[in-house]
Image (cartoon, rainbow, N blue to C red; front, top):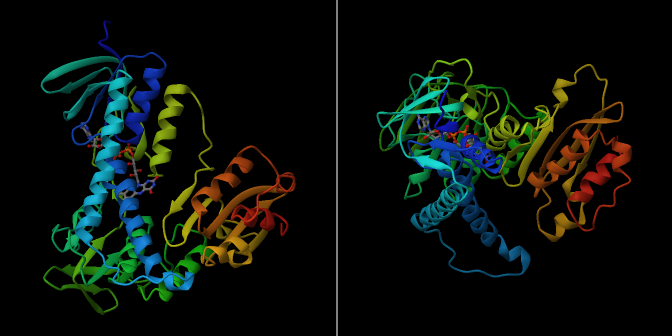
Length: 415
Ligand SMILES: Cc1cc2nc3c(=O)[nH]c(=O)nc-3n(C[C@H](O)[C@H](O)[C@H](O)COP(=O)(O)OP(=O)(O)OC[C@H]3O[C@@H](n4cnc5c(N)ncnc54)[C@H](O)[C@@H]3O)c2cc1C
């Protein structure tokens, strides 16, 4: 058969564009179809825009407490539309950079909706594209439930919230997963009254229980109202929304963010086609999506039990591997230290948090960190764990002072 391309990819998010760039490096001819913006959810409506807004929130929060550092700042104020404008600029810059990388590496990008006809054929713009191999990386979209349908004006999803130009006085967030927690943290830093509603017994139910409890403590200190073990019956939209809970209570808030996970639109899986990223994965994370792409293209396998999760709260939250509640039979060792034990945390006025490492027979099986720089710290432990470097062996490594990494070193001695 005569193929036009070695590889056709549908979807230009982290899974799709990583596959495209790596395939070109191997000399394959590649065509990539994207119906919206290149970069997918991560770059346009997810990781990047959220963290760009969060950076403004962080700086504002730091300025408000600058007095503690001997700096007096008067008249600090938020220009929220400028915050959003800066976020747009960050996204646009990165999007242009990505488009240029794809172009320079010789990936043919077609801006169109693509349909998979069979394992070797794509239809887009009423044309057929025939390829030796086909990857589908079409991602996911915000999910909602009956009674809390988005009206995109007052009842919002994670896409809508990125384009608000004014801060509401109050917001209710339904769901305390990564998206809910990050937005609770952003809005509360900006001085918005925040309530968070979680159906499970604990906030961030996917996290280690100790992490959940710590987030709750941090949120309470920030005056975020927490509703746990309670569901939303329905939401009435209006200038002030009414959120009717299944315990009979009604909450009021100017806006509601529904952050109850993401769904994959229905599709038929075709034999012989590779599906990667959010479209097929239980772990809906950008780095998981791009690792899947590298696995398929370069044949570099990765350990699916060693995937970091990071939630950008204040402080950051990061973990991998087993949670303590997964190790119920008691056959494990655990060591914790408080971040306040570290000199650097006092220098930075960032003493909130803890680090916990779990091990079994000397092997590190999980770590859970709530700390400034947790996103970088967790990687250090994963590198050791994945390479079977035992807790004892890791003690031989010299960690710099004063750093947060020292916390990892100290924690090892409690195992
Ligand atoms: C608010 C938010 C914050 C997030 N923060 C983080 C974070 O901090 N860290 C992290 O790791 N993950 C984060 N995520 C998750 C991350 O964005 C996703 O896991 C990641 O984008 C998945 O990549 P993907 O390539 O599988 O799909 P996507 O990024 O969803 O890309 C799929 C692409 O396919 C295109 N497409 C779909 N159908 C077609 C078609 N028929 N034809 C042509 N094109 C099509 C879409 O337009 C889209 O651009 C966040 C998500 C959200 C919503």
